[in-house]
Image (cartoon, rainbow, N blue to C red; front, side, top):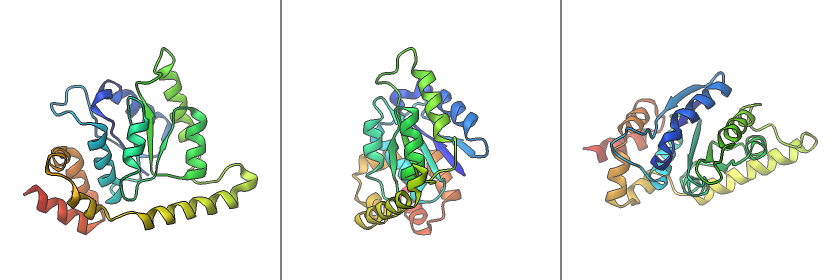
Length: 209
C-alpha cells in the first residue's frame, strides 16, 4: 500500500507527528510525506490540499491519503468533492476503525486543532493505530460482514456514477486555485512519475507549460 501524508498549512506544526505516527502503525506501507511543513514558503488551504489529494488518488499514484485541517470536517467535505475519493472523518479511534472496516475508503481526515487539548496527541496516535490495526474492508460487525460489504460496494458504485472525471474537474477550476495546486511541485511531479491515468498526466503537463 502506498500512503500519502498531506495536511493543510494551518496545521503544519503537526505534520511530522502525523507522518511518524502513520509510519509506526502502517508497518508495511510505502509512505510519502508531502507536508505541508512549517518552513514551506507557500501556504495551502484545505480546499487546495483536497484537490492535490484528489490528484494523488485519481491518478492511482497512491492508495490512501492521510490528511486533516483544524476541524477535520472541512477537509473531509472538500476531499469528498473530488472524483474517486471516499474520505472519512476520524476524530476518535472507534471512528477510524469503523471507517476502515465498513466504508473501506481511500482518504481520512483528522481534526488537528479543534479539541486538541493535552490529550490530543494520545488520541491521534490511538486513532491511527486503530485505522491500521486490521486490513481495510473486512466489514463490521463480523456477523453482518456480507451485508456491510454489499452496502459499501453499492455506495462506491453510486458515488462513481454521480461524479465527473478528474480531468473535467481540473479543467473547470478557476486559474488562481489551479495555479496554486500546480505550484505544489512535489505532489505534481509524483503524480506525473507514478500516476496510471495517462489522460490526467497529459492534462497536467499541458497546464504546466
